[in-house]
Amino acid sequence: MAARVTTLAFLGVEARPVEVEVQLTAGEQKFVLVGLGDKAVAESRERVRAAFAGLGLAMPGRRIICNLAPADLPKEGSHYDLPIALAVMAAMGVIPPDALEGWAAMGELSLDGRITASAGALPAAVAAGGLGLGLICPEASGPEAAWAGSTPVLAPPSLVALVNHFRGTQALSPPEPGALTEGAPAPDLSEVRGQETARRALEIAAAGGHNLLLTGPPGAGKSMMAARLPGLLPPLSAAELLETSMVHSVAGLIARGELTRARPFRAPHHSATMAALTGGGARIRPGEASLAHNGVLFLDELPEFSAQALDSLRQPLETGEITVARAAGHVRYPARFQLVAAQNPCKCGKGGEGRGACGRAPRCQVDYRARVSGPFLDRIDLQVEVPAVRAADLALPAAAEGSAVVAARVEAAREIQVRRAAEAGRPETEAANARASGDWLQAIADPEPEARALLTRAADAAGLTARGWSRVLRLARTLADLDAEPVVARRHVAEALAYRGVGAGA
Image 1 (spheres, rainbow, N blue to C red):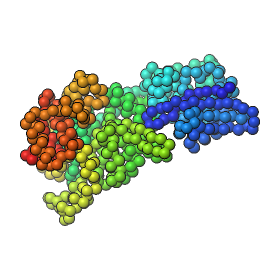
Image 2 (cartoon, helix red, strand yellow):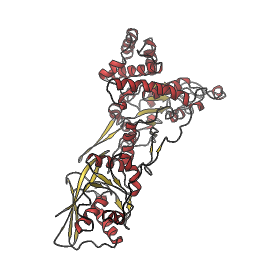
Image 3 (cartoon, one colour):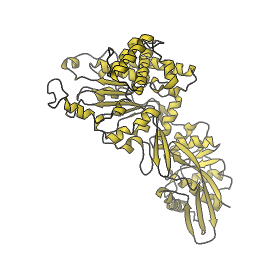
Image 4 (spheres, rainbow, N blue to C red):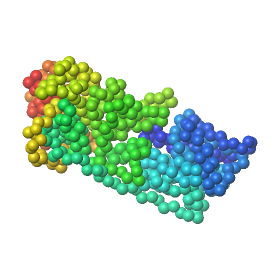
């Protein structure tokens, strides 16, 4: 009769149940592992052998057949070590036959029998709880798994400790959840000199979750302002915290089980590949766009990214998720991020005006900006020109409004959006104006007659796309929320059009 232990296979942030079946049969002494496992899974046999030797436990002198079911589901990673070892022990009678009922297991084994940390403890615990099971995981992953709430968790440091627990000689205590932190403080907005238009755009972007593009010469403060955006954003809600932590858990980015309410801020280098941004690789891992879920993805030197890498972000900018397609199947990762990008006016960075202006203007600017496709730019709500900082600006005292003052206005605007969504029965994760679409957008951002007439004239004159029309309405709704106005007025549409590069008098 086969011994069975439940474990989990990760497909994105989804954890699917896998049954580890072990049967001892007559024949040549051999350890056979089947079930579409990758190289790391195949190597589990040697780690299990060594761990058993470290316990002073001999492998059975019979043929060991280990099946990972369902057999057509690809299995990746070293976290199958522990369930395979437990199933073999149960088949040998080292562990009582019914001891593993009601538990799922995951964890990598070291050669001396210690159970070492594995990525994905939080989604594994959530999935185990959904199956009505507890989770056995490494001691180092216990505080992370404990965040799953009501799911029972066992976090043994070694195989021998787990065996003693099941045999009743040494009980293991359930782990406590790790710390919940507010994250490192972001730089303060008061350190930015001048740039009033860009500061206003930064506040609007934070208030509605809008995408933002800053264009200006080197040294104008584009990266400096982008780094201060996290200080204006409200902390993650409970639902957002769970979603974000699930992605970071699969990526192995949660240390000591500590979760943070600070929104992610990811700033990949412009040499990043499409797979680095969207996810992929031999073992499909989350990319920068997914690691920025519910936070900010900052792309500095935007035109220096490859066209393929940038255009791969067009789908998640619309849908909030990324699907990585492989011959063996599809993997989905959430990727609802706020894009902030910065670029120089041209390759040399000087632009066509002022001292030291580019000698190839305006052709240099046209060629440089053409590296970014029009459909990609159409997905950016706020497009702001950032002028060079003058010496007079640097001599000014610190701005009266720091991050705390602006963040208070942002929080008030976000509370309006959350309350409006709740009254309509929509989840809090969809409350931000930047995510409104269809009938919901029409319901919350229907402008006054004068404002609609202005938008219609501007759309005809500037050739706004249907997407551009919707994004102007979203932006105008955020401007009205910052003014605590229930209706979108003409001035809100006019300012929104200006940020899209369309004149109000069009």
